Each structure stands twice: as structure tokens, then as C-alpha cells.
Image (tube, rainbow, N blue to C red; front, side, top):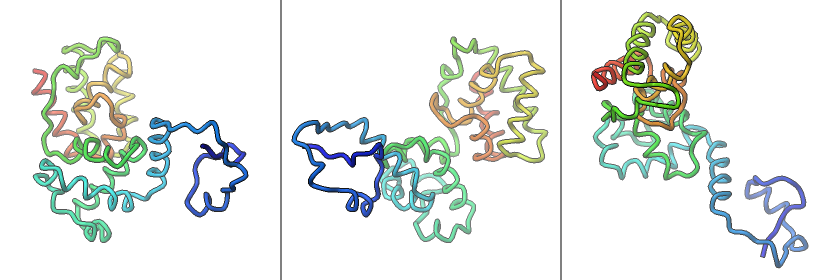
Length: 221
């Protein structure tokens, strides 16, 4: 059994759905239970939440994770996030906002937040290599060492300023964008699928970003 509103609209609030629903549009055939579509719809609802609302929904799941309790954010409670008057609460909400557009369900929150919340990342050196982008160990090391120098000289550390500095660096090095941004993104997140390098730099901040780049260089060496 299925129902449709007779329009292309797919996303409804509960009051909107009640208003739109009618028995006349219920059909005996055509009902499909599509889990992929359900995840997509759920992701749309999550993106409509504020970071604080999303935190309220996600915090219980995080607090069940042993690794989360061992981080600087492990003692956060909803009241802390509502006040947002500590470094940890401010950072946590920024990190959550950064992954929000990629979330499909609330169960995604722990795994997606982990690279942001851990003090030190356990790098897999193989992730820095990308044959498609022509990034080998030598290229990755060169990219990170040059990025470290370029980013260290920035007084303002925003998405715009880091992008400008790195695009200038890429042109000076005479390489493709991916040959610098791929190893940099791995250094910042230790993930092959993550927000972009410029967004990561801005959200993580200068101190944490430079620390991770240095640790990544040591890993590759």
C-alpha cells in the first residue's frame, strides 16, 4: 500500500504531512520500502537541525563510546553546549556542524566526529599514497612540508586565507591541486572520505592543524 501527495514534494514536517494526507490518494499497489531513500530523507531532516539540536540527539550515542570518554570532550553535557561558554563546547558544536551535511543517520555521529575529537590520530601511512592523483611517498612528504611552512606564516587562519595560501603554494610548486590537498586532508583527518582540506583547517584551527601535519610528516618519514 502506498501514498503520494500528487506533487514532487518529498520532505514533510509532521503537521505538513497531516495536512497533505488524504485516503483518496492511498493506492493498493506501488509501495516500496527503500532503505537507501529512507537514509537520504533522514539526512535531509538532520541537516535542518541546528548544531545544538543535533548535539542533543547525538550526545547519548557518543557517551557510550569509550574513546569519547577519554577525550577532552568526554564530560560534556547538554547544559554545557546550551551555554557554549567553554573552548570544548564551542569546538564540539563547530565539529558537529562540519559533519552535519554528510550525516545520514545519528549513528554516523561517533565515527564521523572521532577524527575531530581525538588528540592524536593513529595514521595509516598507506592512506597518503594515491596513484590516481600521482601521490607517492615523496610527493606526499614534499606537499606536507611545504604546506606546513606556508600555513605557519598565516596570522589569520580561516577557510578563505588557508585556501588562498595553499593555491598559491600549489602554483609555486607546479603540481596538481590533489597532489597537495590529498595528503593534507589525510594528515588532518586520517580519513579518505572527509570534509575538504580548507574546511578542516578552519574548523580544527591553526595549532591543531599544524600539530597534525607535523605528526603526519613524522609518520611518512
